[in-house]
Image 1: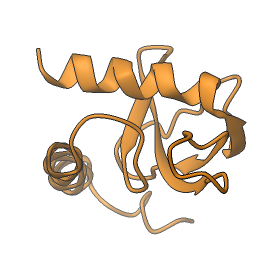
Image 2: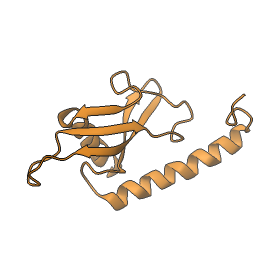
Image 3: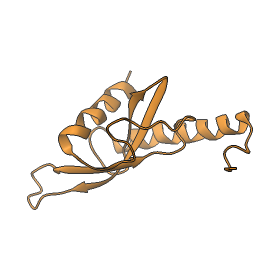
Length: 111
């Protein structure tokens, strides 16, 4: 049996609330846009699937934006640990796939 299943719902909620607060503060410090460490979410069932940007494929010219973004599931932000149907367990994705999701996160967090 996993360690999470041995915890009471109150313990799980407190842990979740702390991680969620840290996620909001971290994203606020990073600012808008695609950046390593940024966490974004996609709607899934009755909740959200959370992902963290862990790498950028940066071209030789720094004036050009990265062509690919590496993501992984951000664990602990959803009690259900949902995964997106397309993003699944993460990996390298085209910039044009991830950037709109990050922009949605930036806009949504400002509301």
